[in-house]
Amino acid sequence: MSYLHGVAVVENPTSIAEPVTLSGGVPVIFGTAPVNQADDPDNATNQLFLCNTFDEAKAAVGYSSDYESYTLCAAMDVFFKAYGVGPIVVCNVLDPSTHVSSYSEVLTTVNGVATATKLGVCLGSLTVSNGDDSSALTEDADYTVEFDDDGYAVFTLVDASISSISLSGSILDPSAVTQTDVIGAYDSDTGAETGFELIRRVYPKFGLAPSLLLAPGWTQNAVVAQALVAKCEDISGMFRCECLIDIDSTETGATKYTDVEEAKENTGITSEHAIMLWPMIKYSGSIMYYSTMYAALAAYTDYTNDNVPGLYPSNKSLKASAVVTADGTELDLDITQANVLNAIGVVTALNLNGYVAWGNNTAAYPDVTDPKDRWIGCRRFFSWWANEFVINYLSKVDNLANYRLIQSIVDSWNVRGNALTSQGKCAGIKMVYNTEDNPVENILAGKVTFRQYLAPYTPAEYIESINEYDVSMLEAALTGGEE
Image 1 (cartoon, rainbow, N blue to C red):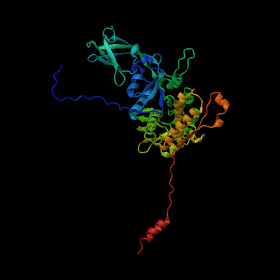
Image 2 (image 1 turned 30 degrees about the vertical axis):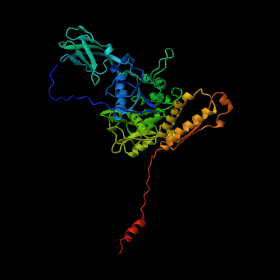
Image 3 (image 1 turned 120 degrees about the vertical axis):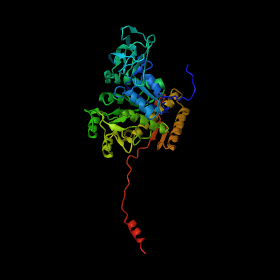
Image 4 (image 1 turned 90 degrees about the vertical axis):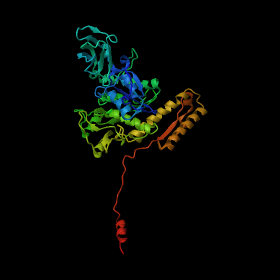
C-alpha cells in the first residue's frame, strides 16, 4: 500500500436527512418505478412496500429522475428530500416480465469499463458477449455490473483488454403500462390482487390505516380517478380516507383555468373523499403531478400538528419553482383566477412571494355545503378520527357487553377528545351512550352503539376589514392645531 504522510480530505455524497415520522396514517402511492434497479426486481411488482427513508424506497423499487416515466420516483423525492416526511407505502405496477421491449447495443470499453446508454436495462434477461470475438461472458467470472446514480448499467470487465462488449436482452417500457394495470383486479382462481385492489392489505400488512391515496400520472384519466375514489371507503372493512385526483392539463385537457370546470365535470367525480388538483408543478427542474407534492405537503402539515390532520394545506409553502401545464407552459394565476377554481371545488397553486397551495374545498363542493364534507380539513379530521376509534377499540371487540365496557369506552375516548380540544386541535369532541340507541334486541344481537359529536375548525378562508373615513378624527386633528 502507499505510504501516507500529510493531509488528505475525503468527500462523502450529501446524505438525505432522516425524515420526520407520521403516526396518524400513511399515504399510499401507486405508480411506476425502475424496478430493474430494485434489490429484488422479480418481486417488486404489485407489492406494498412501507418505506421510512429514501434509501428503503430505492432498494424496494429503484430510482430515476425521469418523473414522466417513473411516477413513484417523484413521490420519493418530494416526501423524503423536499419535505423530509415519512413513512409512505409505495406500490409499483410496472412488471419487468411484460412491460418491456427488446434491447441490444454494443459498448466501447474504456480501461475495462463500459456504461449502457439506455435506462431500464433488465439484468436478469441480459446476454453479454465479447465484442471482439462474440464469445459469451459470464457475470461475476468475466464481468461485474451495477447501476450508477442515474440508473445506467455500468459493466466492469475482469479482462481490461476487451475493447467492446455486445449486449442483448430486454429493457423496461413504462409506456406499456395501462390504466388496467393501475386499477388492478382480483383473480378469483389464484387469489392474486393487483393495483388498487392491494389497498385493503395496507392495515393487515403494516398495522397502519391509509391517510391519503394517490396515483400520480394516472388519475388525470377519469376511469382511474373514479376507481381510486371508490377505494376511499370501507378499506379493509373498517377504514376510510381521502384521495388526490389530478385534472388533465395536456393539450387535449385543461390548459387554462377557464377549462377546469368542464374538465372536472367530465370526470364525474363529486365525492367528499376526493381532493381535485390543477395544474402541475415544477420541482428541481422537472415537471410532476400536483397530487405528488400536495400529498407530501399535507403529510408534513399533519406532522406539524402532532399528526392530527385538522390543519389546512392551503396557503402553505410548496417546494415548487413554477406552476405549469403538462407541456411546461408556466402559469401566473392571480387570486381572482385561483378563486374561480376554488369555487368549483378545485385546489390550485399561487405565487405569493413563493408558491403556496390554494384551496380548501373537496370535490363535493359546490353541490355539497355540509362543513364535514365540504372543507378538506374537516373531512380529513372526520376520517382520521373514525380510523383512530377503530384502531383503539378493536381490542375491545368480543368483550362482555356490560356497563364496565361501555363506561370505559366513553370515558377514555372523551379524555382523548378533551385533550385535543384543550390543545386547540378542534372546537370540541364528545362521545355519549344513549339507551334509546341500544334497545335490548340490539344488545342481545351483540351490537353496542355510541354517538360522537365532532367540531373540527373550519378555515378562516376570507378575512375582511371594513374601512371607513372618520371625519371626527380630521376635525379633532385640525382643532387641536388651533391656538
